[in-house]
Image (cartoon, rainbow over all chains, first blue to last red; front, side, top):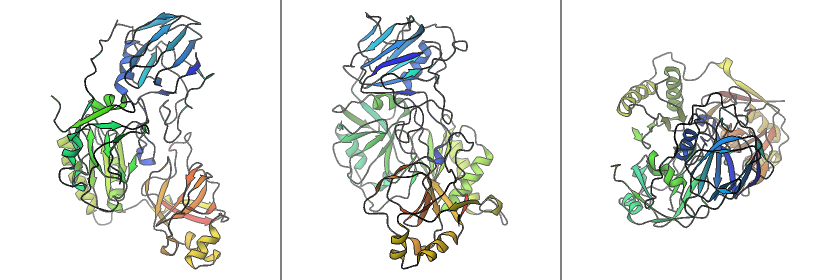
Length: 285
Length: 207
């Protein structure tokens, strides 16, 4: 069991989300930066899809009622276990009664904690993820929340000492044009890629809202509601793009000018309000 | 036309809701490899298939779309009538009188027109289990409320534009409330969690 002493600004349980229910109006949900959750799980010998904790701006304090192996990935934040500094991307043992404290990440937004055995809250529609849009899944963490930890029997041996950190480059998101790029004025894609956009305060697990050059439409009117994918760059009438993250609505009526490459979704999920981000239509190297 | 929606999804333009429903049904029946989500919309079906061979999937979807556009004679476009979901409604909604006034009908006529036609689930969206029911009597086509309610109770039966719906859970909402049903249309403990899916036939009846 893990007891939450403080959740920080916003913290939830996340796995890799709900699959197969989008046609019933259910968002996919799951870790916004799925790559970081997968890595944290691998470090403690879990299956990649095990549920962990997603912190926003760090700031959490957790006390472990029984000892457990844990690993922390994603936005790097100052980390202490029983008062001693601990490292990111390295598995470490927290003894029974031990407290893990997270500071605020100097860069990046979302930090992940995986625990060997996984967080074992009751799944809803096949997932333990909190869906911030629809309210499915467990409540966001608060002081006093107690989280059960699963049996470690199924876990693989811990075999990695440290996963190397990739140096954070400038935030560039590769986009594949479409499906509705023809709803925009000629040159709108070039406009999207011409200058950086600024990440707005209204960003959350549903999407990263951006401020910058307006993208002009070639067609007026509404698009009949259609299925949306994670990474979709949707453009509402304001002309200011939104990049959809894990909790995006499964259908929408604003045209999507392009879709962010899956490999770059982790970058999108780590953008903080005020950050600058660029788009490019150049394919992956 | 089949459009690209990122690396892992294709958006098939069907042009019509009935074609979307037929393509959805055939895709679910065939169980194409790698497909994890099939999301029908009024004029499209989104097919999400991470790791699938995209050119092959695109070609296959093209063939299935042609089939869905011109179904073989005798192919039912929708499930048989025995699959009609009946929703008993207590017609005491907060907007029943104003709907009658706006439609120029008596309350009894509003109820008769709401129960008088079989509706079809077009697609689901807005919230888990929220089905847009198509085929509503045109006399009941009214705009949404100017000011949405901050909370509409689960089970509320409502109309807006050309659609009717049953609120699956309590939520804010701008639809006009005709009544309520005790039928649970969203239950995450049930399998499936909703009696509705795209193409489901629905009939309202006075409780």
